[in-house]
Length: 285
Image (cartoon, rainbow, N blue to C red):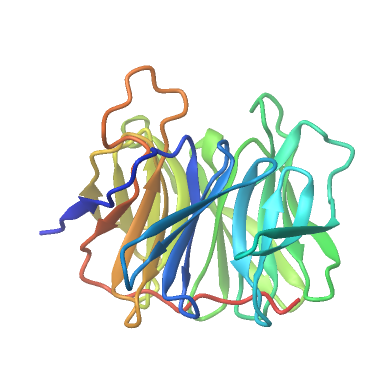
């Protein structure tokens, strides 16, 4: 039977997201988009560090040459820690100043896939981008209210991506220069909450966080529900596998919008799930 434990810390995340395992640092990173802040949990010492950010930060991805790239409200930037330095290098949506980046991840080819959204969640003007190692970007898909994911099948054939507000996960067939053929994949019911962040395990199964559903779920590569793990936080946001053997799962959550947050809402958790994940991909730019 799966079990979870709350990682001790002093501050609950307003909008915890973007969980990332760093083998290089033996640490798990995650963002608090609205604080805004970047968190780091050392797996060696258990210590947690938190860096204040100058604006909403949706995700971070490790660079192959060291450091990180982050997806800020104002666009892409290099991030170095200890000491903290932030160097912007591109804004894909200067025409939408009320938008921000929400979730992103590197693929095995060293590209970053990331989504943008209207911060007020009033307009379907979000898009799915692919950032190349040469730091050029292109729109892969558009018309999103709240984009979440992405995640990639181990075989490299599929990209998974959701519109949380529409309770719909899609899958795309990967191509050499991007992805094509968006198709509905998993539809969330009223009792399920909303599909938020996700990851894929070594067996090719998709793990999804349920915003408003108090759980995480594992789906088969065909989209069938395999199992669900109940969580004490109501707004579960993201998942990653970590540790040298990729057999430790970490889960983020959020308090934003809750009038009566509990000690678990906004918490960061470790979950026993009995499966292994995939190595973290690095951005080649």
